[in-house]
Image (cartoon, rainbow, N blue to C red):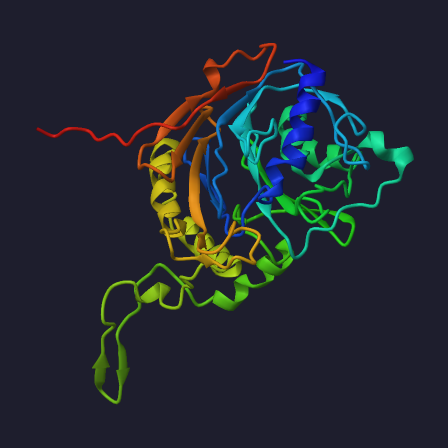
Length: 369
């Protein structure tokens, strides 16, 4: 797949595919689990109101990627050659990633931030030092091996305000969460036109508001604990909690971003520290089930950009669990309960073109008798 063909795909995708929707959704949730054997497991959901038709997309080493410049045209921005091979989920057929992992175990994704994401003002003279917001994850994963490298690398480039003409002449409003093989985590945002990189001690990320506001909100729930509460005694009378779960009474259960952030935080920090990376791979699916949106739970009016017309609903289109120790990337699509496994150790790191893997598989069951 040559440079001109990539440019053609990007142009068509940006001006046609995104005519119907933005690149990421309103209700994504992500987190990181630490194994007792030096491994880490990343989990995230992707919610959307229209079919993204995502495929696992593999971009090899030494592959030329045309950066989208300030004029919104591929090739007028920072063109780069990939240093590391990357695999992950694309959207709407575009050769960019909204979630993924590279060969060094750096893993993460883009999450929607429509109320806060404002990118840098880049002059035409600096266009060749800039990329579009939808290219942030691909740039990070294909160039860097660690969170510290990403921090330094993003200080040297711009993320411009290039627009998607068919999407209200605006940029894709996203923020980025990243975790490396040593368990370091950061969140990269562009707030009021400035780059903001924040270390993430929680490993959790959702959508708006700004990440610092999400962190400041944690103290509001300082009373929550996974430990069961003792019965209350008043003037000799004992009042017993009605059931187990009393410690987390008050844990928010709705789909708002701040609520999902707190829920993900307490569910992940409650997992036993004795669990191995393999056990965390299974645990991640159970935690992610708390954020799966059943069809119709979030109904979108025709005026909503995610709805795609009257009667639109937002669903969890796919869910990812990634083991960055063993370089395994697992995906569960909305249409089935199948978990599909992709082994990054088996990819051709030095292939000459992008490769796509369809995840459109029928529901399967394991027969018992």
